[in-house]
Length: 324
Image 1 (tube, rainbow, N blue to C red):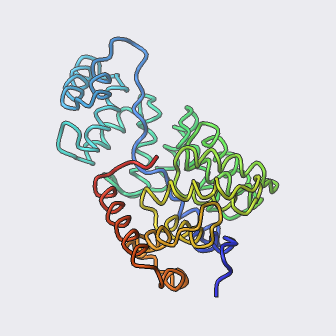
Image 2: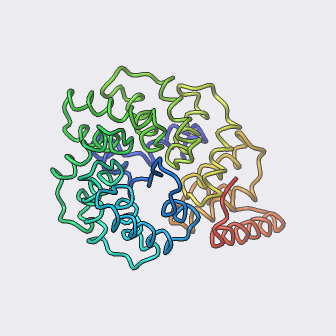
């Protein structure tokens, strides 16, 4: 039988062991660079974009480019709208053209967006060398997600120098509040990769990523809290984090929360809640024979409560209700 709720096994259940694999799991920050509002006012194009009036934003940005062929911000906005199909039919090839024009004129977010497209082969041929060059351009101009992705590339070298360089670049993204970077930097600190091992600082960065609602960080930080690993032990706080991720539909968190409800660690023992969370995790493909056995002998009242909770929570997922 699995050791009851030490949660030491939790970490191994979802985290890949090799750092090369971890880099792939963390992946690159998907999507495009945030569209930054130019300093001049009024900016009708960006204002329309912020209000969700995408057709108006596209029209206003187009007019700006027609009047000024050097308007990089408008070009970047056109790339964003075209890539995501906002106010116009999606066209990745055309979006890449807009991003290229804006990047050539110094727009850091456009350079970042085009780099990600080149890295993934979306709208342009897959070209890691071009992607790296564009990321370097964007990072030099202060684009934090670009620094993070350059850090991941450096870690892929799997050399001591690459580890140090990767950690430094990821730290830049973390200091700028990029959740993926906060999580990655915490993981590097815990492993002592590219820098001295520092579990306390790892806990600080993991906490930041968890507060920023980065799902993997919520689960990892909950485990750290439960075990008192680099942070003050707090089983109740761990349970709250598991609950937040579980309520959002994460099957790993649902499974861990079910175990806590069986054992009464961080929460009051409640077999109906345990059964409900276990059923939800199973619904998402995460089976757990130990939990099946622990919740096999519910009373009719407990079983009815569990079934009602499952229906209620499945409905909340379908409605897209955001967890507290």
